[in-house]
Length: 141
Image (cartoon, rainbow, N blue to C red; front, side):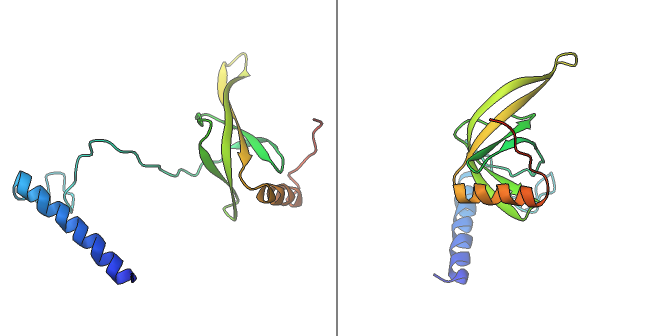
């Protein structure tokens, strides 16, 4: 199927939704009171994922995975993508997410998130890149 045919199919499907809505609700205002250019629809249920690019402080790194601090929880089992200077991206699965006290006096809490890379070769490449940037220090196990 060509791109043009695919686009046409999407447009037909959308027009069908508009037609069905008109049958149920009557004529749709193309510009409603909040000045939207197209009609909007209320969802009964549904979720979307919104990608937010936020830097996180990495605690440690190996070719198998990494740990970082976050103010937001990351549920175990979820997949995320770590990016290095927007040039290299690596997929990782969240293994654990534990709330830790950072400062007794200020009662500051953050999540310690541990993840495992889905591709160990990419993990190895990430370790090498951090070393080349002189940002890698060996820590005792």
